Image 1: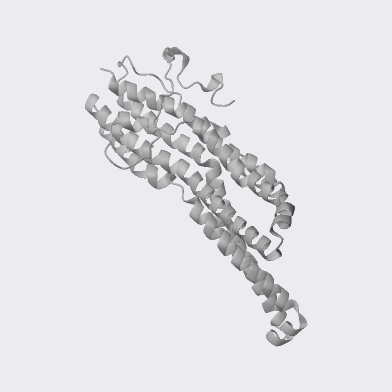
Image 2: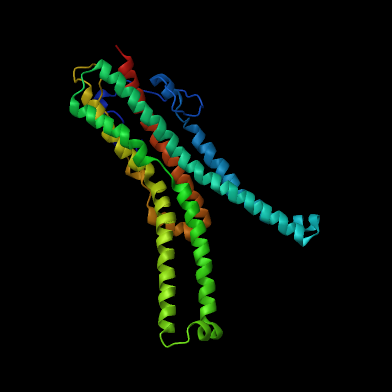
Length: 318
Protein backbone atom coordinates (compact mmCIF):
# COMPACT_ATOMS: atom_id res chain seq x y z
CA UNK A 1 0.00 0.00 0.00
CA UNK A 2 1.16 3.56 -0.63
CA UNK A 3 1.61 6.21 1.99
CA UNK A 4 -1.94 7.35 1.41
CA UNK A 5 -3.31 3.94 2.36
CA UNK A 6 -5.16 3.47 5.64
CA UNK A 7 -2.32 1.38 7.04
CA UNK A 8 0.11 4.25 6.43
CA UNK A 9 -1.69 7.05 8.27
CA UNK A 10 0.57 9.83 9.39
CA UNK A 11 -0.84 9.89 12.91
CA UNK A 12 -2.20 6.88 14.68
CA UNK A 13 -6.04 6.92 14.71
CA UNK A 14 -6.37 7.59 18.43
CA UNK A 15 -4.38 10.83 18.00
CA UNK A 16 -5.74 11.80 14.60
CA UNK A 17 -8.34 14.29 15.80
CA UNK A 18 -6.84 17.35 14.16
CA UNK A 19 -5.89 17.61 10.49
CA UNK A 20 -2.82 19.55 9.47
CA UNK A 21 -3.15 20.90 5.95
CA UNK A 22 -0.33 21.88 3.63
CA UNK A 23 0.32 25.53 4.33
CA UNK A 24 0.31 28.04 1.50
CA UNK A 25 3.78 28.78 0.22
CA UNK A 26 5.58 31.71 -1.30
CA UNK A 27 7.89 30.86 -4.19
CA UNK A 28 11.28 32.15 -3.07
CA UNK A 29 14.83 30.95 -3.41
CA UNK A 30 16.27 29.63 -0.17
CA UNK A 31 19.35 31.37 1.16
CA UNK A 32 21.54 30.92 4.19
CA UNK A 33 20.42 34.22 5.75
CA UNK A 34 18.89 34.13 9.20
CA UNK A 35 15.18 33.41 8.98
CA UNK A 36 12.48 32.54 11.45
CA UNK A 37 10.74 29.17 11.59
CA UNK A 38 7.68 30.77 10.00
CA UNK A 39 9.77 32.17 7.12
CA UNK A 40 11.48 28.82 6.65
CA UNK A 41 8.12 27.09 6.21
CA UNK A 42 7.05 29.75 3.71
CA UNK A 43 10.03 28.74 1.53
CA UNK A 44 8.70 25.23 0.98
CA UNK A 45 8.46 23.99 -2.58
CA UNK A 46 4.84 24.19 -3.79
CA UNK A 47 3.92 20.56 -4.41
CA UNK A 48 1.74 21.29 -7.44
CA UNK A 49 4.72 22.88 -9.21
CA UNK A 50 6.49 19.52 -9.48
CA UNK A 51 3.99 18.20 -12.00
CA UNK A 52 4.38 21.39 -14.03
CA UNK A 53 8.16 20.94 -13.98
CA UNK A 54 7.88 17.43 -15.35
CA UNK A 55 5.39 18.51 -18.05
CA UNK A 56 7.79 21.24 -19.16
CA UNK A 57 10.69 18.78 -19.29
CA UNK A 58 8.56 16.28 -21.23
CA UNK A 59 7.78 18.89 -23.86
CA UNK A 60 11.37 20.13 -24.12
CA UNK A 61 13.15 16.76 -24.05
CA UNK A 62 10.68 14.61 -25.98
CA UNK A 63 8.37 16.61 -28.21
CA UNK A 64 10.96 19.19 -29.29
CA UNK A 65 13.29 16.71 -31.07
CA UNK A 66 10.31 14.88 -32.57
CA UNK A 67 9.04 18.18 -33.92
CA UNK A 68 12.47 18.98 -35.35
CA UNK A 69 12.77 15.59 -37.06
CA UNK A 70 9.28 15.94 -38.50
CA UNK A 71 10.24 19.39 -39.85
CA UNK A 72 13.48 18.30 -41.55
CA UNK A 73 11.83 17.98 -44.98
CA UNK A 74 10.19 21.38 -44.70
CA UNK A 75 13.43 22.96 -43.49
CA UNK A 76 15.39 21.44 -46.36
CA UNK A 77 12.91 22.80 -48.89
CA UNK A 78 12.82 26.22 -47.24
CA UNK A 79 16.59 26.60 -46.67
CA UNK A 80 17.61 24.99 -49.96
CA UNK A 81 21.19 24.42 -48.86
CA UNK A 82 22.62 21.25 -47.36
CA UNK A 83 25.30 23.28 -45.58
CA UNK A 84 22.71 25.56 -43.98
CA UNK A 85 20.57 22.57 -43.04
CA UNK A 86 23.60 20.96 -41.39
CA UNK A 87 24.31 24.23 -39.56
CA UNK A 88 20.72 24.42 -38.30
CA UNK A 89 20.91 20.77 -37.19
CA UNK A 90 24.16 21.35 -35.29
CA UNK A 91 22.72 24.44 -33.59
CA UNK A 92 19.64 22.45 -32.58
CA UNK A 93 21.80 19.66 -31.14
CA UNK A 94 23.83 22.20 -29.14
CA UNK A 95 20.66 23.82 -27.77
CA UNK A 96 19.14 20.41 -27.04
CA UNK A 97 22.31 19.29 -25.22
CA UNK A 98 22.08 22.47 -23.15
CA UNK A 99 18.48 21.62 -22.22
CA UNK A 100 19.59 18.14 -21.13
CA UNK A 101 22.37 19.62 -18.96
CA UNK A 102 19.90 22.03 -17.39
CA UNK A 103 17.54 19.11 -16.74
CA UNK A 104 20.32 17.17 -14.99
CA UNK A 105 21.10 20.13 -12.71
CA UNK A 106 17.37 20.69 -12.07
CA UNK A 107 17.03 17.18 -10.64
CA UNK A 108 19.93 17.85 -8.27
CA UNK A 109 18.42 21.20 -7.29
CA UNK A 110 15.05 19.60 -6.43
CA UNK A 111 16.83 17.61 -3.74
CA UNK A 112 19.46 20.12 -2.64
CA UNK A 113 17.01 22.98 -2.11
CA UNK A 114 14.91 20.73 0.10
CA UNK A 115 17.92 19.51 2.10
CA UNK A 116 19.18 23.08 2.64
CA UNK A 117 15.81 24.34 3.83
CA UNK A 118 15.07 21.28 5.95
CA UNK A 119 18.47 21.43 7.66
CA UNK A 120 17.74 25.01 8.65
CA UNK A 121 14.22 23.95 9.69
CA UNK A 122 15.66 21.40 12.13
CA UNK A 123 18.08 23.99 13.51
CA UNK A 124 15.29 26.49 14.15
CA UNK A 125 12.91 23.83 15.46
CA UNK A 126 15.46 22.41 17.87
CA UNK A 127 16.24 25.92 19.14
CA UNK A 128 12.52 26.49 19.83
CA UNK A 129 12.10 23.09 21.45
CA UNK A 130 15.16 23.53 23.67
CA UNK A 131 13.66 26.81 24.89
CA UNK A 132 10.31 25.18 25.62
CA UNK A 133 11.35 21.75 26.93
CA UNK A 134 14.16 20.19 28.91
CA UNK A 135 16.43 18.37 26.46
CA UNK A 136 18.47 15.37 27.56
CA UNK A 137 22.15 15.43 26.59
CA UNK A 138 21.74 12.26 24.51
CA UNK A 139 18.91 13.78 22.45
CA UNK A 140 20.83 17.03 22.02
CA UNK A 141 23.86 15.16 20.68
CA UNK A 142 21.72 13.17 18.27
CA UNK A 143 19.91 16.23 16.90
CA UNK A 144 23.14 18.15 16.43
CA UNK A 145 24.64 15.16 14.62
CA UNK A 146 21.61 14.86 12.36
CA UNK A 147 21.81 18.56 11.51
CA UNK A 148 25.53 18.20 10.75
CA UNK A 149 25.33 15.15 8.48
CA UNK A 150 22.04 15.87 6.66
CA UNK A 151 23.49 18.20 3.98
CA UNK A 152 26.72 16.21 3.75
CA UNK A 153 25.05 12.85 3.22
CA UNK A 154 22.05 13.72 1.07
CA UNK A 155 23.18 16.58 -1.16
CA UNK A 156 23.00 15.55 -4.83
CA UNK A 157 25.89 16.11 -7.23
CA UNK A 158 24.85 13.59 -9.83
CA UNK A 159 24.74 16.03 -12.76
CA UNK A 160 28.49 16.71 -12.64
CA UNK A 161 29.22 12.99 -12.38
CA UNK A 162 26.90 12.16 -15.26
CA UNK A 163 28.38 14.83 -17.54
CA UNK A 164 31.92 13.71 -16.68
CA UNK A 165 30.98 10.08 -17.21
CA UNK A 166 29.34 10.72 -20.59
CA UNK A 167 32.37 12.64 -21.86
CA UNK A 168 34.91 10.10 -20.58
CA UNK A 169 32.88 7.15 -21.83
CA UNK A 170 32.41 8.67 -25.29
CA UNK A 171 36.10 9.59 -25.68
CA UNK A 172 37.43 6.25 -24.42
CA UNK A 173 34.85 4.21 -26.32
CA UNK A 174 35.70 6.04 -29.55
CA UNK A 175 39.42 5.50 -28.93
CA UNK A 176 38.76 1.83 -28.14
CA UNK A 177 36.82 1.29 -31.39
CA UNK A 178 39.47 3.01 -33.53
CA UNK A 179 42.24 1.09 -31.80
CA UNK A 180 40.40 -2.20 -32.30
CA UNK A 181 39.70 -1.52 -35.99
CA UNK A 182 43.27 -0.36 -36.62
CA UNK A 183 44.91 -3.17 -34.68
CA UNK A 184 42.92 -5.86 -36.45
CA UNK A 185 44.07 -4.80 -39.92
CA UNK A 186 46.96 -6.76 -41.39
CA UNK A 187 49.10 -3.67 -41.79
CA UNK A 188 48.63 -2.55 -38.20
CA UNK A 189 49.29 -6.00 -36.83
CA UNK A 190 52.51 -6.38 -38.82
CA UNK A 191 53.63 -2.86 -37.98
CA UNK A 192 52.81 -2.66 -34.30
CA UNK A 193 52.64 -6.32 -33.23
CA UNK A 194 55.39 -8.16 -35.19
CA UNK A 195 56.12 -10.76 -32.54
CA UNK A 196 54.34 -13.92 -31.44
CA UNK A 197 53.25 -12.26 -28.18
CA UNK A 198 51.64 -9.41 -30.11
CA UNK A 199 48.22 -11.08 -30.27
CA UNK A 200 48.20 -11.64 -26.50
CA UNK A 201 49.17 -8.01 -25.99
CA UNK A 202 46.36 -6.92 -28.29
CA UNK A 203 43.79 -8.98 -26.39
CA UNK A 204 45.12 -7.66 -23.06
CA UNK A 205 44.80 -4.05 -24.20
CA UNK A 206 41.27 -4.64 -25.48
CA UNK A 207 40.27 -6.24 -22.16
CA UNK A 208 41.85 -3.38 -20.17
CA UNK A 209 39.99 -0.82 -22.28
CA UNK A 210 36.76 -2.74 -21.72
CA UNK A 211 37.26 -2.92 -17.95
CA UNK A 212 38.00 0.83 -17.77
CA UNK A 213 34.82 1.58 -19.74
CA UNK A 214 32.75 -0.61 -17.43
CA UNK A 215 34.23 1.09 -14.33
CA UNK A 216 33.51 4.56 -15.74
CA UNK A 217 29.98 3.50 -16.71
CA UNK A 218 29.34 2.11 -13.22
CA UNK A 219 30.80 5.05 -11.24
CA UNK A 220 29.66 7.98 -13.37
CA UNK A 221 26.40 6.80 -14.93
CA UNK A 222 24.87 3.84 -13.08
CA UNK A 223 25.63 5.09 -9.54
CA UNK A 224 24.18 8.61 -10.08
CA UNK A 225 21.04 7.15 -11.69
CA UNK A 226 20.63 4.69 -8.82
CA UNK A 227 21.05 7.44 -6.23
CA UNK A 228 18.43 9.62 -7.93
CA UNK A 229 16.17 6.59 -8.06
CA UNK A 230 16.31 6.04 -4.28
CA UNK A 231 17.10 9.46 -2.80
CA UNK A 232 13.63 10.21 -1.39
CA UNK A 233 13.40 6.80 0.23
CA UNK A 234 16.82 7.36 1.84
CA UNK A 235 15.79 10.82 3.02
CA UNK A 236 12.56 9.45 4.48
CA UNK A 237 14.53 6.89 6.53
CA UNK A 238 16.85 9.62 7.79
CA UNK A 239 14.02 12.00 8.69
CA UNK A 240 12.19 9.25 10.51
CA UNK A 241 15.18 8.99 12.86
CA UNK A 242 15.20 12.76 13.32
CA UNK A 243 11.47 12.78 14.06
CA UNK A 244 11.75 9.93 16.55
CA UNK A 245 14.48 11.82 18.41
CA UNK A 246 12.53 15.08 18.41
CA UNK A 247 9.49 13.20 19.76
CA UNK A 248 11.57 12.05 22.73
CA UNK A 249 12.08 15.69 23.73
CA UNK A 250 8.34 16.35 24.04
CA UNK A 251 6.94 15.29 27.46
CA UNK A 252 4.24 12.65 27.36
CA UNK A 253 1.95 14.89 29.40
CA UNK A 254 1.99 17.59 26.71
CA UNK A 255 -1.60 17.76 25.45
CA UNK A 256 -0.46 18.64 21.92
CA UNK A 257 1.87 15.67 21.53
CA UNK A 258 0.86 13.13 18.91
CA UNK A 259 2.38 9.77 18.01
CA UNK A 260 3.82 10.23 14.52
CA UNK A 261 3.73 7.34 12.09
CA UNK A 262 6.40 8.81 9.85
CA UNK A 263 5.73 8.32 6.10
CA UNK A 264 8.50 5.87 5.18
CA UNK A 265 7.20 4.17 2.07
CA UNK A 266 9.07 1.44 0.19
CA UNK A 267 7.29 2.40 -3.02
CA UNK A 268 9.48 5.52 -3.05
CA UNK A 269 12.32 3.13 -3.84
CA UNK A 270 11.71 2.26 -7.48
CA UNK A 271 12.94 -1.09 -8.94
CA UNK A 272 16.16 0.31 -10.39
CA UNK A 273 17.35 -2.71 -12.39
CA UNK A 274 13.97 -3.18 -14.09
CA UNK A 275 13.54 0.50 -14.93
CA UNK A 276 17.11 0.78 -16.20
CA UNK A 277 16.96 -2.27 -18.49
CA UNK A 278 13.58 -1.35 -19.96
CA UNK A 279 14.71 2.27 -20.37
CA UNK A 280 17.61 1.11 -22.56
CA UNK A 281 15.29 -0.97 -24.72
CA UNK A 282 12.61 1.70 -25.04
CA UNK A 283 13.40 5.38 -24.87
CA UNK A 284 9.78 6.18 -24.05
CA UNK A 285 9.93 4.12 -20.89
CA UNK A 286 12.84 6.29 -19.74
CA UNK A 287 10.39 9.20 -19.75
CA UNK A 288 8.08 7.22 -17.48
CA UNK A 289 11.02 6.52 -15.17
CA UNK A 290 11.87 10.22 -15.14
CA UNK A 291 8.25 10.95 -14.20
CA UNK A 292 8.43 8.41 -11.35
CA UNK A 293 11.56 10.04 -9.90
CA UNK A 294 10.18 13.58 -10.06
CA UNK A 295 6.79 12.55 -8.68
CA UNK A 296 8.48 10.66 -5.82
CA UNK A 297 9.25 14.06 -4.33
CA UNK A 298 5.60 15.09 -4.59
CA UNK A 299 4.51 11.83 -3.00
CA UNK A 300 6.94 12.21 -0.12
CA UNK A 301 6.44 15.92 0.55
CA UNK A 302 2.66 15.58 0.67
CA UNK A 303 3.15 13.81 4.02
CA UNK A 304 6.54 15.20 5.13
CA UNK A 305 5.06 18.71 5.18
CA UNK A 306 2.39 17.49 7.58
CA UNK A 307 5.11 16.48 10.04
CA UNK A 308 6.64 19.95 9.73
CA UNK A 309 3.25 21.51 10.45
CA UNK A 310 2.83 19.28 13.50
CA UNK A 311 6.17 20.30 15.04
CA UNK A 312 5.72 23.96 14.11
CA UNK A 313 2.30 24.18 15.76
CA UNK A 314 3.68 22.29 18.74
CA UNK A 315 6.39 24.87 19.46
CA UNK A 316 4.07 27.77 18.64
CA UNK A 317 1.43 26.58 21.13
CA UNK A 318 1.65 27.79 24.70
